Image 1: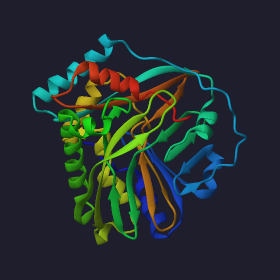
Image 2: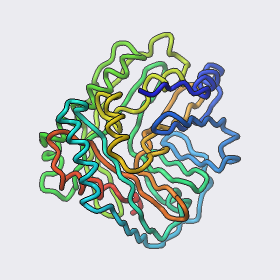
Image 3: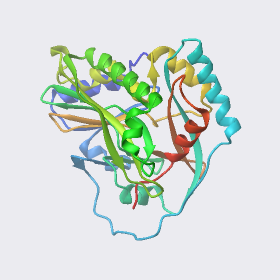
Length: 325
């Protein structure tokens, strides 16, 4: 498993103990850990818009109709990786693997325009390199109580009785149970009295393409004394995020590295804002990255032994959207 020994985790501990506000970003493989105090954000062409914090100037609303075209990898290419995952599931190396792809897209908006116009709980724009508009909280810390909200399982909202179908789908349910169990165990490393407060809540997500329902749960605990005011130490313990990795973590990471044909980078990493007292952070999903002048949308989903190839391929494509409406 990853060593998670980056010196910037110590810097995060130091800043949180001094109650200095800061923003951090950690990539999926925990190789790149960036930390910015408030006055360093704009200097580094980094803009954030979180539910409780924003550093972005008001923009003139642009009414351009959005045109998004995607060019997903072929079924044959997707199936190669999917089959590797299934092989490992059968061998018992994993019982849930989050498998992701990189899809070239064309859109008539810049990354900056996407950032300003999209509606999401968490938004990040970095250096005209990537934009992220994530609906998924990683952990929140409020008065030394830690909360996490795993989001696993989505369905097209136009499906008949969509919310009920999602809640009762055997595969989606198994995936959700697994992630809740995994994150309950993860939180127990840094907190006591860990409990599930809300199970299988259904959230509505509106997109430019189609509307989705997503399934979430809430887990909480009281931070152990040695982790209080130590954001970096907490992240070292909890990363990579279980909801976008799978279980068990160490072996599943090897499966992902073998099956996926792209480097995730900051996609499915974690970023967060510490306001001097409390922390809010998100999993960096719903992600568009610029590479050699082209744009790529990274998306995927959880695979279990119950997964159906056609459904998973479709889910990966369903998640290619921008939340502008």
